[in-house]
Length: 245
Image (cartoon, rainbow, N blue to C red; front, side, top):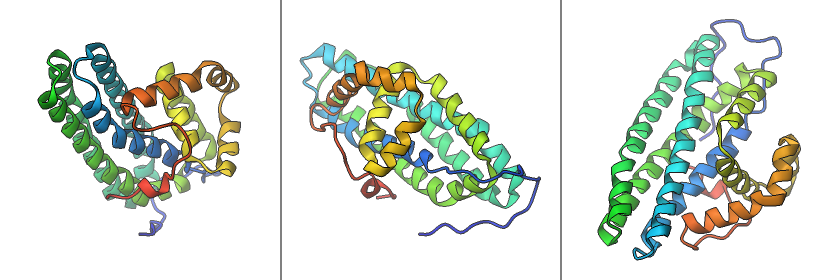
């Protein structure tokens, strides 16, 4: 369903308001892809390989930490300005906050299930953990679809490009290297060649160099681990994974 622009009202916006917020969708696509493969990765990891089980559990936690950080940044930097500059979007913002709280509760509930699986690997503990990850993924798909439909058009109108870029830079600082390479790889695989060139041009040179030297291999190993070898790096249709289904 096409988004409808909300009426202008509220506090004055920057004179240069208006930004390209599409890069947020790229991040969303990475989370959609990861939460689609993680349950299979848990279910198909050999229970007798305790070291691999522990590595997968750490990987799932790493993705969860990245999702929590992503939502924290949105809570801190996006919702307040959106409400003050465009008060009519308040119902949309409140819905986003509710979704974030529900996702956070599910992420918090993941730890004991992961501990049970790593302590006693087996079909039962793996299934309980995998089913919980699927629950997170289902809620996340709904949330991301609603955010892209309801909130993203407002973001593109009320933030200046410099404000938007500053939040993006702040986000990059908080991710550790393993998270950066995993998401950098998945995002690249999701983009068309035209979008990929523009995306790469905006990435700091240091990250581009490190990714060529070590990051791509780390991404490939991480995706293989987290999917239990069922997903290979390479282009995929991110648009087909969008929506609530």
